[in-house]
View 1 (tube, rainbow, N blue to C red):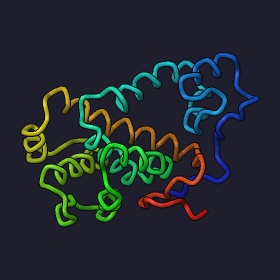
View 2: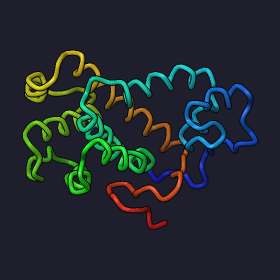
View 3: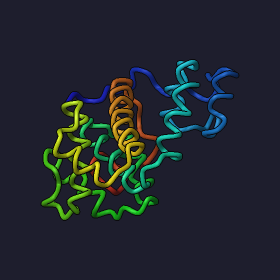
View 4: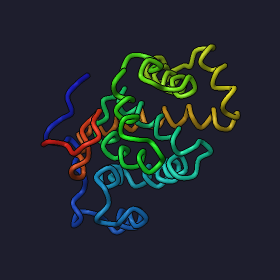
Length: 195
């Protein structure tokens, strides 16, 4: 996996560089004090205007259980080498009910299905589905059939779009070089980034 560019190729806009339109778009996320992801993506106001509600729906208005959502996001972040996403979602995953040992287990087996890491068969299948979506862009039939026993059609649509959305974000944020906002955990960790 390629190293993230340093310095950033597209740095988050400084508060005094934001246009009135950009400030309006950022108002729901903290305005000029918004996180780096938002102050970077708002460089394209037209796309940001459409992307923010979609991302917000996946994050806060979806049909998946919050714990499952965060397993998907953390696994996609790990598979894509997305330090920014991982760092932001460790705290969100905790709030969704994941313990630190579970969060670390998402990263402990980056190439396998995870059942040897103490996951239930359902959670191992979910992690495997993310691996397949990120790696091969398709969930194989046995994994799909197992997911079908746990999730509704609506949830299966959401699950696949959620994994794809966070893989897309990873590519953008990694390519831009968006820096962490503060002392978020490093990729695969649950503690503060030692940098």
